Length: 429
Image (cartoon, rainbow, N blue to C red; front, side):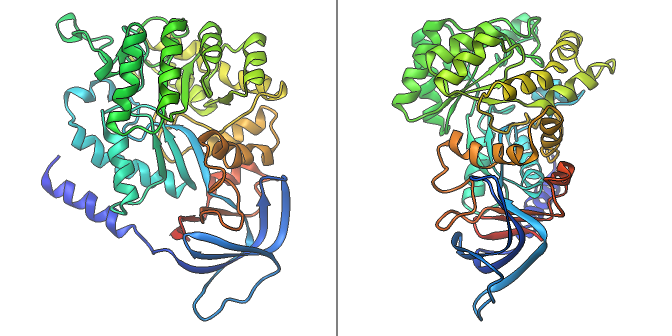
């Protein structure tokens, strides 16, 4: 990447900052109360700086120091949250060789574009669950927090923790003299001591939570996509250490045995959950573990697996077998009462298409309002930030999005977010 390209990207990012936090009155034709699952008609939301200071019935007249935002024909709701993204990359037919041609700085600059697409799609908060390029999500989070660039509020896991040869071992599939023997520094562990060191290393690097890959995965250059890959002792060591450092723990898991071990060890959420069985569902409900389904990623990889050469040959049969199952897994989990938090695995498919997940959730049997709740209040509870985000209430941060029309009648409208405010700043109008 040349210096002219770098300057252009930085300049474009700065120009995209459309406003600063101020005093606003929003006239909401329909306001979604995601706590009670109630539609409220003709409400006003008063915002000062980055905080909601009042939510009142009727259309309040804007004062001299307030700017009026007219959303009378819109449905207004809290900023959306995606609990599973990868902002440091995007999987495609050339991405497996990127690490040989791209530096972390190249990936970091590219991630500015991915972050902007995500925010403009209405997702004001995300969990980044594993970097394609080490350190990029944490650096991106810092740049957004400091106001250098625009993007969603990021909770970053940093490097996912794997076992040798497991999903997220960064040396899978390369020739022997390049495999070396990665350890906790690189997010690869074998045994309880390694597990504790890997968690502490993520803390040292500035991560916000811990992400484990407790079973095989679809897109890794390894044969098995669902076998358990952590011992119970390793999982216990991770979870105990994570709790000491104030981390939540989430796990990538396709196979049932890996999920059972992880839940019994005390993790907070399960990603994908493809082969979830009745015992896994019972354990999740008993232990109040959230399910983050990522249906969009499953459908995407199944579609691309049919294209010769799009994925490496070791990946194609896993993508074809596992990808299509997530939709039905979600339908069963929802029906059985498992707690759901919205997540897509964006980065497996193009960033900015996150809202497709709503349509798939509704087609699997979840009511539209509950799907939106999963991406607002439920996600905030999983992140343990529902005291400041997740609903439109007096005292909470001013993360607000809107769509013209009624998404409860047509959930596909969630893919057409027309207004975005994050931290009291208008991003899109």
